[in-house]
Length: 386
Image (cartoon, rainbow, N blue to C red; front, top):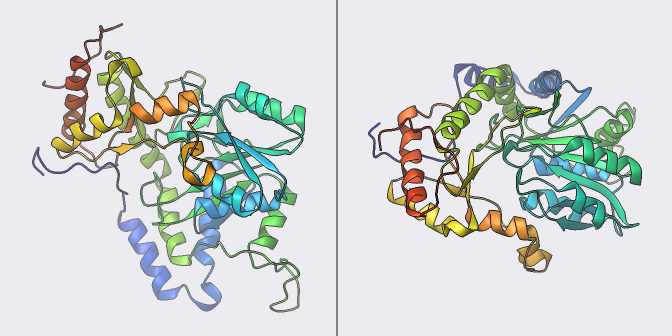
């Protein structure tokens, strides 16, 4: 690879372990063995996360949909979530006939603001969806306290938070249920796929019932469904790949952290720049490192993308505020969510990314930062040859 080759924003790490498992699933995983790798994947993931139950799905959206249905979220209900979000968190709410309620984010974490959550609660509120955006962690203690006071469920959308932990508790394990994504861009991948997790016996039993077209586990009548359910199941072949990924969990998560910290050491402290928060009470899996310029710097996300594009670097914009999208009214968006969207970008991060490739990305951001005219509040550690 030369120093001008394209740098992708993310790609998976697949080894001979995953290939061997997938090959075995293709050759032998049929008939009575068609769920073998699914069950192994679920067991390994539950053990990794430290939860009682895991149910592998075709996507994180499917996991969220099943969990929300198990909570009996439906017409007339409201689910509070951050305005900075991917539409996948809101879509199941709408499909179930309920209404997503968008509130602003905290400017320091870009996650749900607990104060705004409390202000948005009405008699129709059924749940709070806590999304750990880009691996950054929601204030789960505050959100759980609010939920207990008002009798609400906490839905933990940890699609982007593999490897993140909040005060010793793994992301996804602190709510009524959690959901994870194994899309091809994620830290663990199955190509497409997701996982529903919970410690709640009753919710898990409902998910088993709903997730098999409304057939209760253990009934003797073949093909008997007593409700209309869903089919969001992952395939055995995908689960085989997922099993290999979970068995490499420590390696994959550690590499994400290494990549982030190299960025952080060389960018944190540059004028006008903010990055993912580094907290002493939590540990992030840093799915994607984020850079957001202060509004006064005059650097838009389009400026960021164009500067990266000129250097043959693929960089992804952060999410639009959901309230600004046509399905939800095309409103102005919450202030912090709007500013983040207008000035933020996701930096490349993948397992076999080299230091030299990271330094190409860092060099672009140094040049943009110096062009803003801001004064440094503290010197940045510069380890790249500018």
